[in-house]
Every structure is written in structure tokens, then in C-alpha cells.
Amino acid sequence: MAPRLLAAGDDPVRPGPSTPLTIDVDGEPVTGIRGQSLAGVILAGGTLALRRTSVHGGPRGVFCGIGVCYDCLVEVNGQRDVRSCQRRAADGDVVRTQYDPLPEAPEGDHA
Ligand code: FES
Image (cartoon, rainbow, N blue to C red; front, side, top):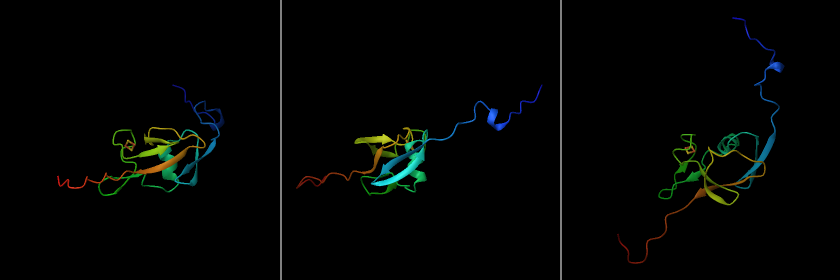
């Protein structure tokens, strides 16, 4: 069997030059590269808490990274409940971290 060493520049699967992008995370510009997930760009920008729990307001971030836990929900371009680990970042995306407090109990409801 012949060795298959290739010069780095001749490797057909070698990725090309990266294309930068910028998204807005809670009003702050965050840069990434095309192909990254929103969660990847947001985490690299230093934001670890993507949403807060309704009951106690506890921070939640990327837990599973495969679309199962829903801990990475954010609002993207006005669309709520987007799993940021499952969506590719696009230049100009506007991302808002989410917090939905529980509604107040009606007056006299002691249940
Ligand atoms: S990190 Fe679990 S669904 Fe995104």
C-alpha cells in the first residue's frame, strides 16, 4: 500500500479560507466564521447563559449540543425558542437571550 501523504495545499478536504461574520447578541456585536452554529459564536463571544429558567431564573447554556435538551433556546431575528446549537449563524443575525417569568397567579387563587 502506497502512502498517501499530500502537501497541505493539495489536500482536497482542506477547508478554504474562513469567511467572517458578525451577529448581534443582546446589543453587542460578536464575530464568528461562516459555518459555526449560533451557540458556537455566542459562546466564543463570552456569553455562557443563553436563557434563564422561568421558576428561579437560573442560567442555562449549551448542555447537550445536539438539539435534545433545549437549554440553548434564544430569540433569533424575532423568532423565539430557536435551539442555538442547531442553527448556523448568519451574518447580521440578531440574537436575544430569553427569560420568561411565570405568570402571576390570579387574585384569590391559592392553589
Ligand atoms: S444544547 Fe441542548 S438543545 Fe442545544
